[in-house]
Length: 635
Ligand code: ME8
Image 1 (cartoon, rainbow, N blue to C red):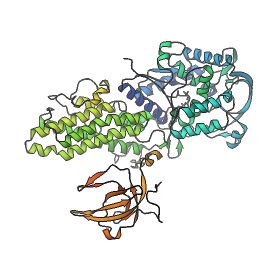
Image 2: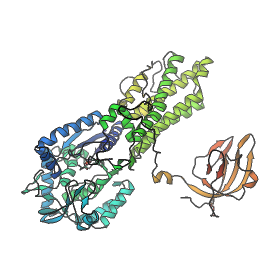
Image 3: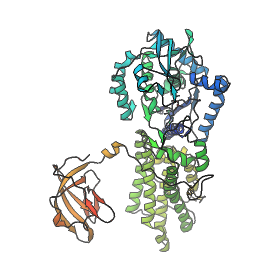
Image 4: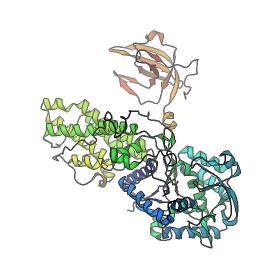
C-alpha cells in the first residue's frame, strides 16, 4: 500500500537577518506538523532553506568588505546550526544560490516569458531595499516616503524591466480562492487576500538592473530576476522539479506553505499566478501565522530587541522553549512574548502537571509494587472511563493538528495529563496499598502506564527530549517516535511484568526568586491565554426566562430551575441557593449556556448553565437590562 504523501514548507530565511525567536516560531511549528504527519504514517517532505539574493544582501556584504558569497556562507551555516539545536528534522535545505535552484528559476522565467505573460517595459516607482518591493505613488504618500519596518527612506527608481502579467490572473485567482475554502487559512487572511485581489491587481515588475546579485534573466543577462520570483520558486526546486521527476511527481503540489502573515500575499497571489502562467498545479494550502511580538512591538534588528533562541534554550532547555512556542499562542494569532510567560508555562504544564504525573506514578509503582507493572484485574467503571479518555485523546490531537490548531493539540494532551492526575487522586492507590488490595493496585497502575505511553507518543511531534525520557522510565523498548499511529489506537501495549525506572525529575521547576544572572529577579507575569473568536462562538448562549425554581433536598447551595429558552424548556441545576430564594426567581430573565454537555448533579440532570458574576462575597445573576425574547442569542 502506498503511503499518503505530505509536502510542507517554511519560508526561506534572509541571511541578512539575525534569526530570532520569531523565525524559530515558524520553523518549530512546521517541524511539529511534519513530525505529526510522519507519526501518522505519511511520507513527508519537509523543506526549509535560505533566500540569498537581492540588493539587501549585496549591500550588507559590501558594508562588511565581503563578496555576497563570502557574506552568506557563514550565516547560512549558522542558520543550519540553529535548526540543529532546535532539532528541526527537515528533509531538504535549499539555498537560492545553489545551481539546482538557479536552473529552475531560469526555466520558469523562460516558460512564462514564452507563454507571453512576461513582457519587457520600463518601471518607475518608489522602492524599499529592505522589503525588496516597489510602492505606488499613493502607497508611498501614505508611508510618508519612509519604510517604517526597515527605517529607511523610499528611493525613486526608474529602470528598464520585465513585467509579469499579474493583472490577467485576478479573475482566475478569485475563482480558485472561492472554490477552495482551504486554500488560504486562517479565514481572516483569506478575506484580506480576497479584498486585495478585488481591489485590482497591477502587473508586477520581475527583473532589476540596478544591482547584480541575483539570478540573471537567461535571455537578457543584464537583468537579474526579482527576488520574490526567485525565492518562491524554491518550493519547486526543493522538491525535485526539473531534476528528480519521481520526487517532484510524488510531492508536488505542496500540501502546506507555512508563512508569516506579512508574506501571505506573495504566497497566495503572486506565487499561484506564476504557477498558473507556467501551467503547474497550485499548492493546496497557504497558512499565514501571526507574529510573536514584544510589548514594544515587532522584534527587529533595527530596534535591537530580538530574543535569541540559542540563549533561551541554554537557559531553560529545548523542550521548554518548543513547548512555549507551540502552546502559548493560538496558531494564527499574534502573541506577546514574555520570558516570564515561558517560565510560568514550563512550571505549570511541564513541571507541575506532566513532571509530577510521571514522578508520582513511578514512585508509587516502586513503593507499592516493587517497580513492576502487573496485569490489570477486573477493571471498574472508573478505570473504563479513564481508558476511554486515553483512547479518545489521539483523535482530538489529530483533529487539532489537521486544523493547524497546534496549541489546542497540546491542550488535548494536557487534558489527558490532568485526567491522569485526577484518576490518581480519585482512585487513591495509597489506600489500596494500606488495605493490601493488590488487584486494585495492579489495575490502577496498569491504566496509568498505558496513559503515559500514549502521552509519550503523542508528544513526539512537539517535544524532542521528554517523550524518550518518559518511555525509558516506563521500561519500554525502542523510542516512542517509532511506534506509529496504530499503537495509539490499541489498549494493552504495556507488557505486564515490565519494570519501571525512576529517573531524575523530567522538568525541575524554574525558580524565579533566584536573581537572574546580572539582573533583577524576573517578575512572574502570565499573559492570559487568548482564544480565537471561533472558540467563543462555539458557546451557544441564549436568553431564557426562569419558569420554575425549587430547592434541592440535601444540597444546600443548589436550586433546580426550569428555564424557557425559546424552542424548549431546560432543567438547569444552579449553585445560587445561598443568594436567591426560589420564590423570587420565577419570571427572571437569565443568560443560559445551552450547548453544554448535560451532567448529573446530586442525581438531577442539568441541561445547561446559568451565567452569574461573583466577587467572592456575593453572587449575582447575569441578566439583560431589558426584556428580550426567549431563545435570543447572546453575542
Ligand atoms: O520573509 N514572529 O524571510 P524572513 C513570527 N525571505 N514570525 C516571524 C517573526 C516574528 N516576530 N519575525 C519573522 C522572508 N518571522 C523571505 C521569505 S519565502 C519564499 C521568502 C517569520 O527571514 C516571517 O513572518 O524575513 C517569515 O514568515 C519568516 O519568519 C521568514 O522571514
